[in-house]
Length: 260
Length: 255
Image (cartoon, rainbow over all chains, first blue to last red; front, side, top):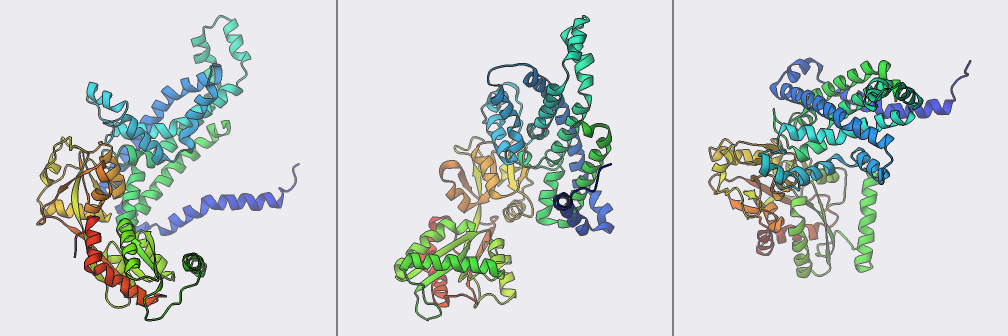
């Protein structure tokens, strides 16, 4: 039977917790509860919520399709420069998102390195479009998918895959029937984290995709604009974001969280 | 509050000692010693040149310009920072100081910052005026509503009877300029001084005077100025012909 946890750990742990809880309490204390329904049903909020859900889900799907293969390559293939590639993949986690947004603008903008030929060949214009929002969100959020899945693949007991292969399963079948099911919980955790980061993305979005209601103005951008002019709406949207994010994270906790 | 006061005071003493080896006496009617000027960030370059000219005209005076957002500078003054002169980029911040008796005398409007259309170098979209802002094929940016440059721009468009096909509402004028400089936007509305300070990175297109809107910059000596004589002299210099001609070189219009 374990004894009482050390007091020092309790005190420090609670201080750490307070850093997360106190700002939320501040938000709740400022919330104009009686006007909340009115504030949250305006068309600015409705447009931003719709756009936020669409773009965060889209970037999660892209992160799944592109990020899992990347994670597999990083975990399983010993290629030269792998450490550098891994650092590049992790970079968006530590870069200020504004820097990421500016880099995206210089690369994929109308006058950008890739954006200019892309625009000339296809007419596609990424900045100031909903696609721009999705790309910015994917840029900052996909690293969560890659590092979560890569970690799971590295910790996987490869004898299961070996056994499947020795029984005649091809590489693709092993991946589909053995590897992916075994890393399922980590994959789900990666999905949840990626979605949550994409849902909350601000800096890269406003720098790369701009800010226009119904096209590029997601909830975080709507909060930022409202802070300048309409603090009550800003607080209401913030609370909505906290509620949605918290609900998703709590709902996923028991099933998948411990995989992290 | 006291801590910030002490920090600023310490910095002042250090500067004064470094400048003349002798902490400046204050409170005399003689124009000498140090004068601390808190000025809106958009005035940084112009006030740097004005300070030099003022120091030439008044040997023995050392001007220290403290640039920042007008609202942040206002808060510093309210918190007791030993500032001699305050120059704001809008009336509202100055009014707040007047309301609590922090201003000596009456603030004077010393400059106006008109709006101008900013386009990328070479004006690739061939923008000629505010009417082009209604063209949905162009990529148009403004500052967001609620930000002063955004509110002024909307007022100018309203005056011109133009319904703009806006592609982005940028959080501040710097963010807007970045996208114009990069050629990602075809046109935006900024202050004249922003076009000046951007050098060749953007081109400016005049907005006619009958629809243009100007930000008004007020200046005042403060009632708790440590160096009231120099504060009054500095304000007088800024509104004088010499001060005005320096401001004009940076794109400011006279009041």
